[in-house]
Image 1 (spheres, helix red, strand yellow):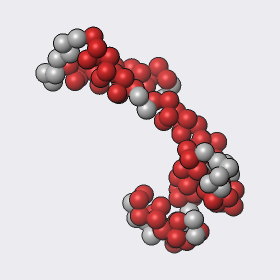
Image 2 (tube, rainbow, N blue to C red):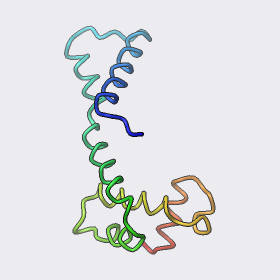
Image 3 (cartoon, rainbow, N blue to C red):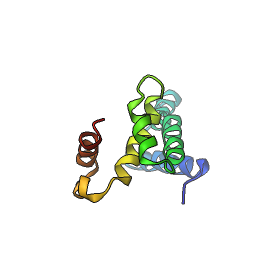
Length: 113
């Protein structure tokens, strides 16, 4: 189940509330605005990345490899999403059940990316 934009914003509001309860006080509107802006700054980029992950999930291995190799034709977010799905779909014989960073390195070596 994927979170809606409203659920994500509510979670961010809870983070701000907890931060204020821990003792850090916002003495001005500008300070509070800067904190919220820092917390929500990457929201749009994350949304675009997750949209690319969802759209590339149904592609075949050959298509994912082609997207990762097309550095000049595809956006970096699309290429990263394709690599993420390729790593997830690669057989255990290639990845040996390692953590994601090691699996990604092994997949890049296996497919020569």
